Amino acid sequence: MEEFKKLGLSKNTIEVLEKKGFSKPTLIQSKVIPLLLNGKKDVVGQSQTGTGKTAGFALPILETIKEKSRTVQAIILTPTRELALQVSKEIDSLKGNKEVIVLPVYGGTSIGVQREKLKKGVDIVVGTPGRIMDLQRRKSLRLNNISYVVLDEADEMLNMGFVDDIKTILKNTPKDKKMLLFSATMPKQILNIAKTYMREYELIEIEKAQVIINTIEQLYYNINPKDRVEGLRRILDFNSNFHGIIFCNTKRNVDTLVHQLTKLNYRAAALHGDVTQDQREKILKQFRTGHVKVLVATDVAARGIDVEDLTHIINYSLPLSSESYVHRIGRTGRAGKKGVAISFVIPSEKRKLNSIERNNNCKLIQKEFPLPKDIIEKKEEQVKEIIKNIIEANMGKSSKYKAMADGLLKKYHAGEVVSAILKYSFKNELDVNSYNDLGQLRMSSSREGRKKRQRGRRRPRSRDRRSNNEFDNKKTEHKTFSDHQANNKDKKPRNSSFKKKRRRR
Ligand code: ADP
Ligand code: MG
Image (cartoon, rainbow, N blue to C red; front, side, top):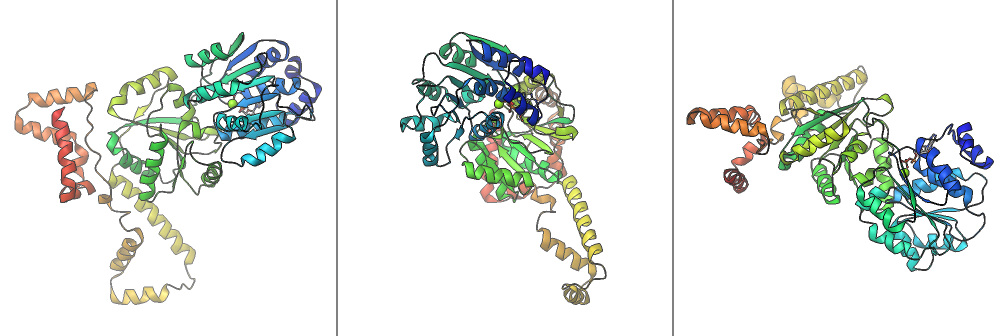
């Protein structure tokens, strides 16, 4: 607590921090707080997620704004609704007995209620750019008296294309306001924003610690883009305890994947910027309780999800930056528990994988997708276990199925009866042929692929053909669903066009 006191915080604040259980400031807080309390400069602060940036700017703002002013004195812009709510709650929890009112504003909730509250007088507004502009247009929110503008999670705001909105919002703000910008990463464009909109500013950067924790097992699978759903299916089926997030790079990919998974009977839900606040809260609740096991999300939508105990993170597409990779996989392996981070790598993304490894100083281990027969074997073990438990739980008890069972057993052999019931219960869930073929990888860009092709060319024709088949071992090992479909007239055109494409290369 001594360290907090030294930063120049008031008695009220120290008491609040004591109650909240903050015993000492984080690195970014110890640099930013005195600067904002004393200095006249604007501040740009970078420090990784979870290092207390919110309190870093909120405490000095709370210390310096006036009580009962009935006008908005500070505005905090956040990229998502969830963050607006989170930041506003954090500020509210830090104000202690200081009489200031904090209001979160974001789309998907009633604007009328927000206008009413603004009319009665609010000191700090936390919100998303869209709703803030809306309130400005309706003259409910006036920023001509503010002392602070904060751009929180600025890198995400940039990613989401909020730069023009920020410009619009800043138009009606006083010249002498203090402007603060906080971000987990500091790409060049952010410094450009700072240079354009800020007065003289101080840049505070906290070096990131080794962020990837060793409780996360990092794996990757090579795959063709068109086979990703099949690959995902195999992973999900092989890991029956799966409870995790699948990351896609765009909203559209999220929706498409959820649609595909739902058709395959998985309980999956989508989370992205277009999901309404109500839906979002409902989905997160279902995910937290485990009713939804598979959450498909974009990076931004997944920010602020605090669900512990996730078993897996899947990068259905590799993230756009090496930093996002760390953010994504950090959702698992928490609190000393083991977690698995899986990345799907399509042939054109080999270099991206290398740069993720290089920039994060980590190594991903290559794996092969589980084979249908292994998945089925595992599923069968589970079914046997479930049946065993039911039998044991009902032993000696009278069951309403007893008469039916006796009747069936009088007519047929026990083996036939049980097989029929399994077939009835599990349909094709235990059928190896329900899995599709994972096509041969076209690794044209990789060294491995090139070597294999060259080796093939040197051989006589007849052997060459055989060696190709050996390479494509998954195809020879199973007569799969897609093999069956190849006999089907409807599927022929797709098959031949695939072949054509390969010939062209
Ligand atoms: P960031 O914005 O850097 O991602 P947050 O401001 O959201 O991080 O803070 C992450 C968590 O750490 C919050 O739950 C917050 O209450 C807590 N926290 C912040 N400062 C401290 C501190 N000095 N000591 C302990 N916990 C803190
Ligand atoms: Mg933050």
